Image 1: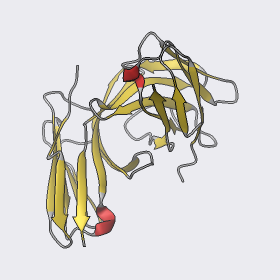
Image 2: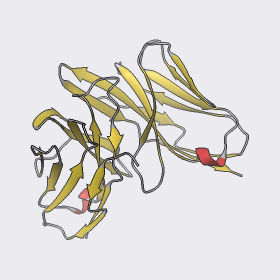
Image 3: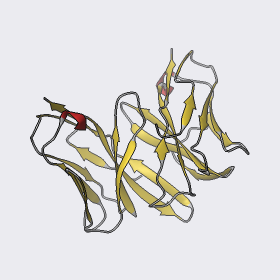
Length: 115
Length: 113
């Protein structure tokens, strides 16, 4: 158990819909990272928040947005969903702002299926 | 766009055999990480290598970072069924505070008893 929790574990929805994925970081960790994992693209970095502020951005679509709240939990919002958005979405947390020795701990993931 | 190529993509071996997984890029990374992921779970960090030419050993696992910090390898000695999983390498790059991990697509290892 990494100490990172993600809800829900599974999500099935239809094209065009909007969903929210939730992540609670390990106690004391200030950074939250979101990743998308699919068979064709592998694991891709989406976005990082550090202590409530956006810190780094990866391959995140404009239809996707995220935020980190004062209690440090984070939400990833996916809108106008397409079939190709079906994937595993992982949240990770780390103690610092992101550097070579700042270990990222991954949650168990949310499996999103768009029908 | 930074890319990390992992090879082989799939590897099926018998218990007791040795194996090596490769991770290559044309880009230079500040560090290279190796993760292991089991079905239904998130990746778990195995090691971080930071210095070009660095070799780290973790029991039966040996990790090497290339001199130019563009490539890495993972060698497993006397593989066991418990080593089965998806092995991912990830290169770290940072521009100021913009720290990012770029992942390879992984090597799916199956160790048969």
